[in-house]
Amino acid sequence: MISYYVTFLHEAAHSVFGYFASGEIGKITLHADGGGEALVATGGPIGVVITAGSGLIIPAWLGAGLLGCAATRIGIELILLALGLLTAWFGYHHVDAEGGIPLALGAVAAVALLTAILPLGRMIKAAVGFFFGFAITKGVIASAGYAYLEWADAGKNEPADPRLIADALGLENIAEVSPTLIGLMVAGYAIAALLTWAWFQRHSH
Image (tube, rainbow, N blue to C red; front, side):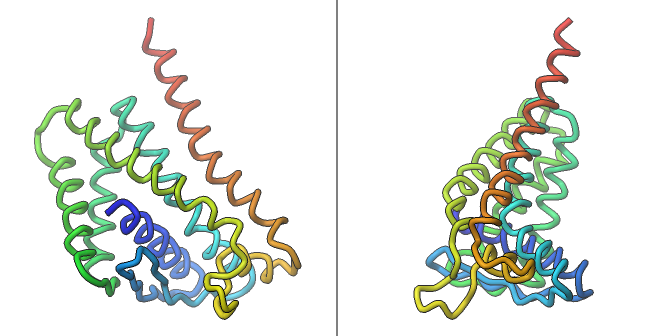
């Protein structure tokens, strides 16, 4: 379920930023083996870079944001509400998925929305936020190697996101792209950790 949801977030990020680049939201396909793709129009080279990079960066930042909000309990309802609405809307309107994936997406959306809107207490909301944050983070770590893949398939028919970015920037080697992608992913967690630490420092007196 975690791998399916992280793949969904990856492809949903492509679709959202593809919309900003081209004005169109692409169809998302999720496969039973954990893979997926989003059909998006990216516009020019900058659109390619932003749209392709978002698939790795946005899930990492979302996981970091959930952990930070859960730790401080600031904005946890808002981020869970946004997560639930995003999952429900994209899952219903833009996802073509196999097997039990639609049920898994529906379950995530329902838990996030109900936790956000019901008077369950801040501790319970924070616990749900931690659960989602750790689950997404686990998936992000498992998929981090994708930043170093040149091609999405062994036959070199479909370029992976780092290859698309390198081509858009006129770079021959994705080694010039991959560390930046990983750095941006890690930066989300570093910023969340610093903000959380600053909050605890401020409220520990």
